[in-house]
Image (cartoon, rainbow, N blue to C red; front, top):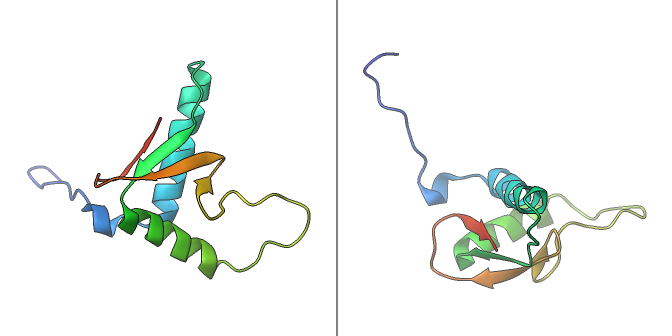
Amino acid sequence: MEGSQQHVPEADEIRPEELIVEIYRQKTERAEAGLSGTQVIMSMGTWKKIRSYHCSLGILRGSLPDYINRDTIFGLEVMIDDREGVKVL
């Protein structure tokens, strides 16, 4: 609608699935540019949100590797900082 403002979600409103997709998008974008990604920076609250969501999915069965473990996601080391959102380096 014309004249209506678009709602921009606050950091605490972003769903964990969206955060996970954003990390993967940034990692893929860096790879396509010929850059390696080794770390992802996020707040402790964001990391807890992602970990909680991941735990709610249950145990991965079969031989497929999991994309997340205690301190990595998609093979990127998780670094904690007081930033909004996520940033792959």
